[in-house]
Image 1 (cartoon, one colour):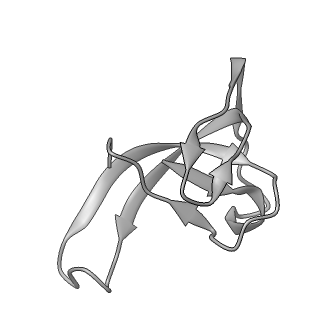
Image 2 (cartoon, one colour):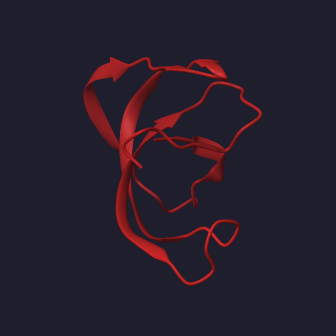
Length: 74
């Protein structure tokens, strides 16, 4: 799972990764050097009543038309 830094709250503090990850996505290759844990996620477009308690996401800075990219781990 990937999330663009601009979509994070200002007070969020991502943790540095020991190595940079560069996954291949439909939006292209994006480099992520930090990770953040998202809590209490709700996706009303899929299900209004279901929530995800916790999910880790890699943070990237590259220009992209998507704010969040869900991977197979989601």
